[in-house]
Amino acid sequence: MLAVIGKSGDADASAAVSAVEAADSRVASATVAQGQSGFSSGGIVEVVTSGEDPVTSDELSALLLAARHAGSREPGHIDLFTKSQSSASLDLTAAADQLGILCSKIGDGIDVSSGGINDALGTGR
Image: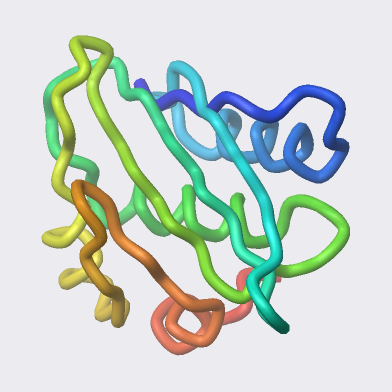
């Protein structure tokens, strides 16, 4: 199960948390932080799963599209991190490779631009 936790009081972050938690049945909880860097807005999404199994390409696709479309504006990029409920980091690069998503590895997660999501998954709307 994956989990996302949101920043309290931020309507966009709360919407993103709800969307990511609903994106896949493995999501246990999630955290979302949104911010601005120069002209680009972005989000950091941390997801906790209910198991040690790697994130599949279907799960990754659902998580990225949910995080991207939640809130009042589309982020320029999404930093996504996943871990199990025992706090073990889960690899995202294999699923990203299967989907053909261009991403950068950042620590235990990945950074994906909106353009990269569009190119690999379409607009998702």
